Image (tube, rainbow, N blue to C red; front, side):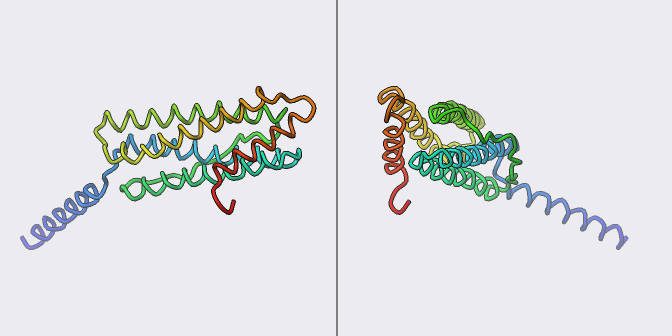
Amino acid sequence: MHFILKLKLNLDMEMKSKEIVTLKRSLLHDTEKLLNQQIEMEGKSSAYYLSMASWCQMMGYENAAKYLYTHADEERMHMMKIFHYINEAGGHAIQPEITGIRHHFNSLREVFELILEHEIQVTKSINAIVDHAFTAKDFATFSFMQWYVTEQREEETLARRAVELFDIIGEAGVGLWTIDQELGKLHATTAGPGV
């Protein structure tokens, strides 16, 4: 009889420990999956911009390189914010495997056109997470993602402005040099002091 009672107590304790673990998790599994996909996207953004920065520096576009090095760091910070959010909500953030990063580009214009296309894809991904969180009534994630909504609007605006420089200034003669100078001004408005 004592053995059965002890077994019952062990089972009760095991059940309670499972309940406690469940109660410690506030993040839905499907939300966690979407957020981990966003971690991968932000990680790829960082690697992509780092590769672009290196190419720009190698080609002599120093201001474009500074702009992109700064953005590579920002994208990593965006990734880390989500990383911490997932883990703090009881989920498991996954370090993405980053492959397939391009290292050579045909022109400075191509670099910034690719950035704009990429930022539009990031916006769509952010919007999908926000929509999911709202539909699932996951208001903590919905609230958390509002920072990304605002940040993404700024990222798209900067990317569009950079591409517009090529149309406004033109690439002939000293055009590319002037564009690089203007990209430096865009960099200065986004980098903050000391960068």
